[in-house]
Amino acid sequence: MQPSYTDHVEITQLLAEYCLALDHDDADRWVAVFTPDCAFEVYGRSFDGHDGLRKMMRVAPGGLHLGGPPVIEMVDDDRARTEQNLLFVERGTQQLRSAVYYDDLVRTDAGWRIARRHCTFIVRDGLRDRPDE
Image (cartoon, rainbow, N blue to C red; front, side, top):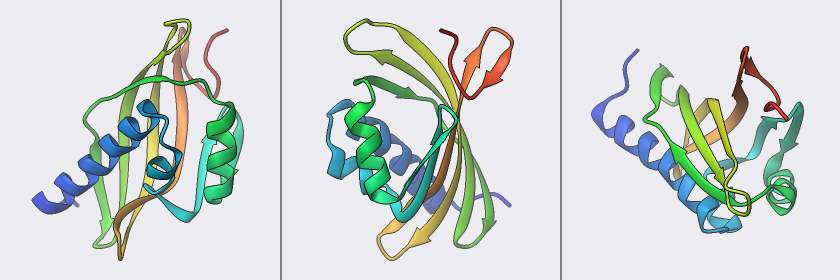
C-alpha cells in the first residue's frame, strides 16, 4: 500500500527531524520523534523507551547524520514501515559509517512517530549489527 502524499511528506519530515536533532545534540527534540514505548535496536542491543534513548545518546558519538530518502510502505492507515540508508560522519575523527534503518512507524495524536528502529551497518560482506572495526 502506497502512502498518501500527506503521509509521505510527514514521514519524510519526521526522519529528517531525527537526523537534524542528533546533529544539533538536541536530546529532547530527538526523543520526541519516538513513541514513549519505542525500541531502538543497534549494536546488538535494544534501547527501550525515552529513558533508554537518552541513555544511548549520552554514550553515542556525535556527528553528522546524512539520511537518504526513505522507502515507505503503508501497513494500514495508522502504521507504516520505512527503509532508509544513512551515512554517519563522526565529529571528532571524521570516521565514516554507513547503515540502513528499518522502522516501524505509528500515527499518533502528535503525528507520525518511530515505534521501532533497527539499525544495520553496511560492512564489507553485507549488513551486520555492528560496523567493521
